[in-house]
Amino acid sequence: MKNTKKMSLVLYNTMGRQKMEFFPIAASSDSVGMYTCGPTVYNYAHIGNLRTYVFEDILKRTLIYNGYQVKHVMNITDVGHLTDDADQGEDKMEVRAQKEQETVWQIAEKYTKAFQSDMLELNILPPDIWCKATDHIQEQIAWIQKLEQKGITYRLADGIYFDTARFPRYREFAQLDMENLMAGARVEMVAGKRNPTDFALWKFSPENQKRQMEWDSPWGKGFPGWHIECSAMSVRYLGEQFEIHCGGIDHVRVHHTNEVSQVEAVTEKTWVKYWLHGEFLNIAEPKLATETKPEEKKMSKSGDNFLRLQLLKDKGFQPLAYRYFLLQAHYRKQLVYSTEAMGAAQRGFINLRNKVSDLKQGAEKSPVEIAKQEKPMQEKFKQAFLQAINDDLNMPAALAVLSKLLDDNTMSSRAAFDLVCDFDRVAGLNLAATETAVPVEIQELITERQAARKQKNWQEADAIRQKLLDAGYELLDSKDGVKVKKIR
Figure 1 (spheres, one colour):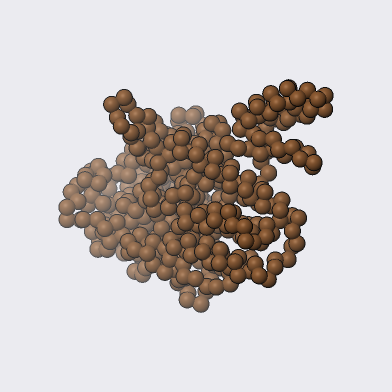
Figure 2 (cartoon, helix red, strand yellow):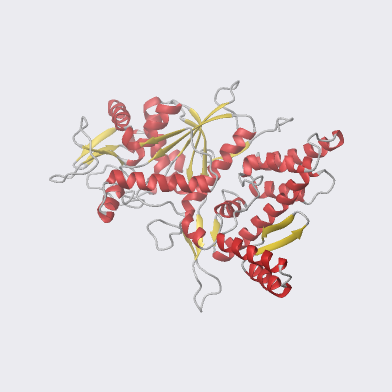
């Protein structure tokens, strides 16, 4: 279903701290370059991390829905991300390899595959290009050499550093108050650092210690800093100027500020036109007897509130129900996760799919051709949906349009179902695939009930029906057989 009316797409640009109408860099082009910061693959992604990737997926789907051709690049950080942002500590990959007694390469492969599996289960469209930091060491070295030629680097005992004082616009992206940013106020200072905001471009391997990941460079054996990979690889695949760069809100102050500085110090021109950042997912900690409500804490890989998608599945939650949970809040608003909130979201998601399932059955019995008088109503719903998503990806409003559509009785099932499928191109909830896999133990109970009914053992059949209801499954008897509906 094509868009019949062009509508402005407005996005909140972190660079200017305001909503801005979206236009590709080349005014006559429909091509969009989009870079999203990928995972550091030293551990599993938690559901807070995954919120960022779902928001970026909605952005990508919205761009495609508006007729743009998106070239999407995502990095895999498999080296150089230290245990803090102070350019101190150990490489997280090396630490994990020691802990699990595997090679860093095995660790990277293991957690990359786990992340990609999570993406698949959440129906996140894969990028056009995956790029690993370790596959692009020479590009990173070359970019550091360009910075060196500009006179923006200096050498310390532990590595090569970017001198932020030599890039006057350093403060702009994160809106830092440089005059009041005292040494150590943002990060602990490495001995010899000229400014508290200076950061490592290349780290030297420790003396008398063999790292699993290290490379020769013009400055000595070592490995790249975390920030340089995204600058070098994004330029490699998208050019010195492209449209969109995304990440979590925590990337603004350090990682993305450093990325901007590394590129624009070399090119002396605006690198990325639109920057979008997703807010945190907090977790509601159990309340104490003296508290009136649970404490809310940011979810963190290093904290004790680490929830994986697999854990949600173990608790009986569907991955797409988690996606639905996320879409009920705007990506720039903090969201609080709790078992109760997730349970409510799953019930809502199942109810949504059941409504679509009923609509689909009606559509299959309806003519394929949409009646002429229905098209204006279709267009009205479509424009309302487009207006919602084009207002800075307002998915709560878009879901409200979808809900209103499902409650509308003025269109045929075919016309309404076609719209649902069209809207799901953005929502990504797989609503057309309404069949839900029935667990083996549930199917066995259904078979037992059918046998009891054949034997006219109505008491046994009713008892089994109740067991199924208690398990969250409703049976609907019809002339065409038994239909199974998951109700929670």
